[in-house]
Length: 233
Picture (tube, helix red, strand yellow):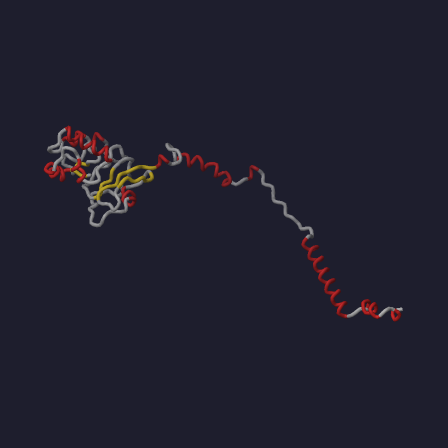
């Protein structure tokens, strides 16, 4: 029957080795793909996590609940840590004098570091670098030793005479903290001129140097020359 068919139909229906090989490759690929899909979709065993009873939690799991209480104690007296900072005025022989804001409990050494450090050649023998700072005080570098501020822990109170100024034989008087009565005790300075000095200090935010004393109304060159060795910024 095959011999009776036309030649072109006989050629189309003939089974050749090349066609068999192509069909075999396609079948092998299909079987491999089907096997891979079956293997990846097979069921797998899942381990169920152990159930922990509420009373069996370790002690460390409840530790974070105590952290807010500790933090509240450390920041007592302030909101957001704003009260845990102090403001001090660092002046004298430092690289960058001025007002600095430091964490509460900082020491004189921290204030010097915040002001860029001490200038070369400055005499710091009278400066207690380990002293704890208090808010609003002034740190003067290169001046004779000054007593700790009144009311500071470990310092001398006002009744002990430490807060009576530095113009009574204990060194130059501080223009940045002296009262009108203390300034009145300087030679050639009366109550009116002492008040002018205090008003100038308030308006300018303090004395950057002793030379600023020349700008106070009522102080001429001669009076400035007399006062210069007796005062400090």
